[in-house]
Amino acid sequence: MDKRIIVAIDGPAGAGKSTLARRVAARLGFVYIDTGAMYRAVALWAERSGIGWSDPGRLEHLAREAAISLTRGGRVMLNGEDVSEPIREPGISQGASIVSAIPGVRRELVAKQQQMGREASAVMEGRDIGTVVFPDAEVKVFLDASPKVRAERRVKDLAGRGLEADFDSVHKEMVERDARDSTRPDSPLRQAPDAVYLDSSGLNENEVEEALLRIVREKTSNGKEVLR
Image (cartoon, rainbow, N blue to C red; front, side):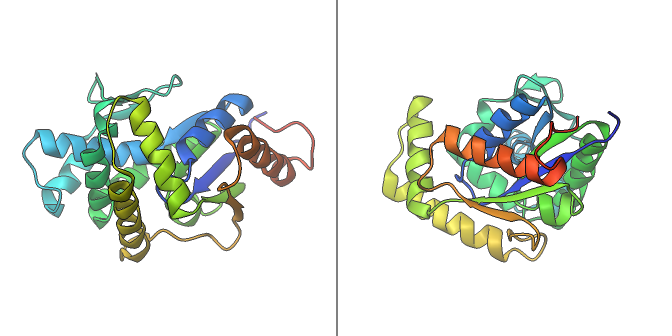
């Protein structure tokens, strides 16, 4: 069918948005769009170019010129280079949070994200998808978890990639990032009024996935097969 559906998943860092969105997109046959990866890509390009993360003019230019694509296999391409691993370094994660607070950068990347969403049904995750990027999305979910649980997940994820991380430091960074994302003047992190709140603190990945799929079915097809 021709109807395109956007599943918007918002929530704080470490809530499990990327894993959930990737799995649900695969189940539905939708495109998975990791908006956080796009900000990470800009932060990475800035670092490599010797541009400070607090230089709004030059960062906006980078965001405009960046050729960012997300493959169906979950790889992130920046100007033709696969940067899937470099953008996940802890330092780049912090840089992405700083870069994403710049209005000009957000405008440029939001335009790219909206274009992606016009081309195919998609599961899109980030911090302002349901409020700014696609306020009319058919399905909106605010995925959350306690800071402690999110920090534990981040430490486990980093360990799985061979990177050492101290829980206290990760937890502190998580709390600081929550504050920065929630209080930034442009597109702050907040739950859309019509978004379904989903706390994943006590759920495993399979349980969160099934919970979201139930929400998608309820919102799009009254329990019948989801439109594609």
